[in-house]
Length: 253
Image: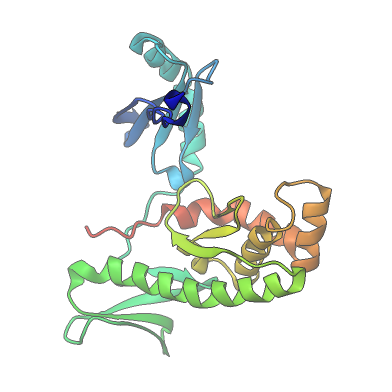
């Protein structure tokens, strides 16, 4: 009888093989993941062209994986040709903030902060402190802006639908811009702060709508439209331009 009270064994994570795969001269991280439910091989390009992922049935031989990659090499080259190269965040380039391009200006002599300003060059992000920390400081700045704007939007849309978010989290996700768990926890990619303000609002409205409609059925999209009348236009913008925002590198050189 005591056996009924024993905890079941913890599920083992799927074996993952990681290596590089070269496509048109670009060496990309490749993850090969076994999935018990997979019946065939599937290939996916991570958002922004950050890497590749192959999902395979258990026990599939390495040779079959290599042949699969060879057969799909042309497809990969065509798809990746449409993905912008990954620009490195550095001084004297522009990155968008709420859809408006801002020139990155580095002031090493001052203390390490990021401020928004404007001069004869137009909108600027003034980044102080050591050069090596500049990408991280801009990423941290975007995270703070995301928390401020998105928490306010979540509160507004939750009031409209009479629901409450259990938690609001911010991550740098490569496969999705936002998510809503069954228990009401919302997650957002802080990179969305580079999108225009209406697109930010659409993303928040989309995830808040899941608090009431945990699906993508007609009632869900109707609720999205009620919360964000620009749903279709913003969804289209994110589909066309999201990859470029995902491609921006915030790691130090």
